[in-house]
Image (cartoon, rainbow, N blue to C red):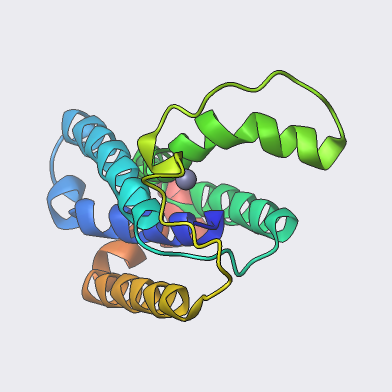
Length: 178
Ligand SMILES: [Zn+2]
């Protein structure tokens, strides 16, 4: 599936797993690390599920990689320091299989290089288990992408208080106190 959909899923993974109410009021470094590890694993599972369901690639691969990367770096930068490791590992988990299996082929393709490539490690990138549609019949893919975005929107809405806390801007007064 396009990287942008995986990164969108990562936002909902962060929102779903980060219980800011609990983490704000405890000496939380142990809980934060644990949550970040779980976020990585859940992100990885979400990648498997999204690659397994039938999908086309509606977004051009160059734009996909550039925007995906921009979203990841921007949201990691804007997340509150305390939660940054959770945000970062959610993103890393959701794109990790593509980093392992696809980065070299993509670099070769985009830069015209011939770096050595290897057999794909993750089964959902193998032809027999991947949901990639090769026939060009993409209506089920459009439906799957739509349902995914609705699910992400519902999760983010349900966890909006946590999202606000994770990405809240600190005003200069707070910064002075810190
Ligand atoms: Zn993949």
